[in-house]
Image 1 (cartoon, rainbow, N blue to C red):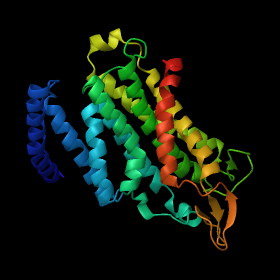
Image 2 (image 1 turned 60 degrees about the vertical axis):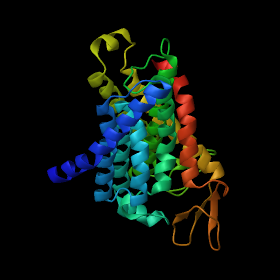
Image 3 (image 1 turned 30 degrees about the vertical axis):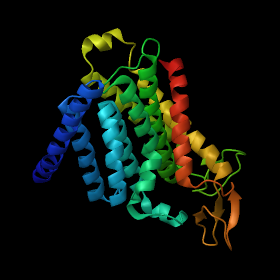
Length: 320
């Protein structure tokens, strides 16, 4: 383990130095601030360590790891709080996907052992957050800022939007992967509350909604603890109380799961095969359950993440 870490450090150290020197040169030519070398090193090293861990555990494919490096780089460069948001989502959702996988194999036609994520899934789950992080870097610079939606609205809006995008993905994953196996009965379709088979897109349950809230909450906890550890005491004292960011994360997980369910019930096809497995496309011998064949699961995840990122800062105004 130590040898692997030293190897990763050996790889990332020259890359981070080149990035820092390039940043310093461009800043002297066109203006702008110089990002400290430690931030460049962290933005290259941390995502590489996480990608290596994901490949080793079978939680991510090689293409997914490459895209994950870009997503992780942008989030870490923007704020360590964003990186922790991503780390909590990636680790906890990977564990949730593998939980009771034998039961999921019986109902999901597209079940993939280990829940290995490819590049499409990485982009659809982390693309919105990384794009917002880029806006944050351009507008606010690189660093951790407490959330203050009154006196520091733009940077706080972007911070909460990143939190919302990742809390949405984690809440929805927890609801899909844990709610489906922990619920006692069949879920109900969110649009008409009629009972549907487990695994149906748009199906919800009380336990599913609760775990989606918890999925967002743990992302909020990670964000809050990072601010406590890295933001100086005078800045934290001058800012509003930051603990409600945990509740904002929980709201993001719940909101994202509801949006995902609404899109899944209406714009994503659900059918059942003769052997009882849920599929997302029509075909011979497949009985239609709900939805239309407009969006696939990846598109639903992307849109849900985007909408949650847009709406959650407005909700945060009510909570914080």
